[in-house]
Image 1 (cartoon, rainbow, N blue to C red):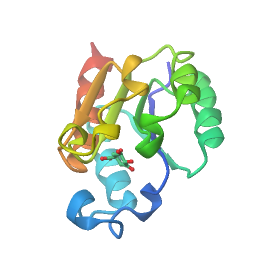
Image 2: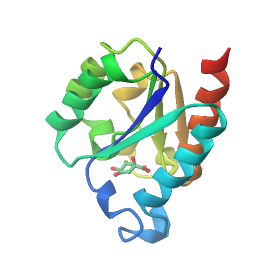
Image 3: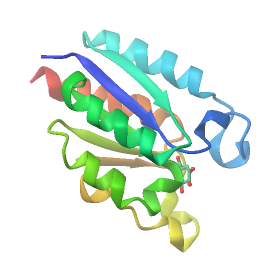
Image 4: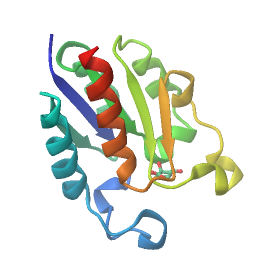
Length: 146
Ligand code: DQA
């Protein structure tokens, strides 16, 4: 079985660390990748972190994950609240899926309270900052070892 976890990131997350730091903090996506790789390594897992501003690109990576990933951690960003296409793609993936939001979306604008992706996600992290990614990897590390 593959021991790789895909960490997928949606629109504007390439600007993490620079974008609205009062909401999303100062850590970059490279920092997230480094931390997650190190945590995954503790469990004999590896990570493959990807980011796109394009919905279809994320759909393609979810399809790729069907063959290449044991689990998906996804921060769909704004597509969380709009994308049936991402939900449909995730429904074709058989392994565990964890949805991550850096901010506590339920404390924010009403349009951020609904997530299409949550209909598929096995767990949802929101409001832990970028530590949410690491906590998701830790959970997967423990559960994939069972
Ligand atoms: C986000 C929350 C979304 O509502 C927003 O559009 C994002 C980031 C988060 O990580 O908190 O781009 O997914």
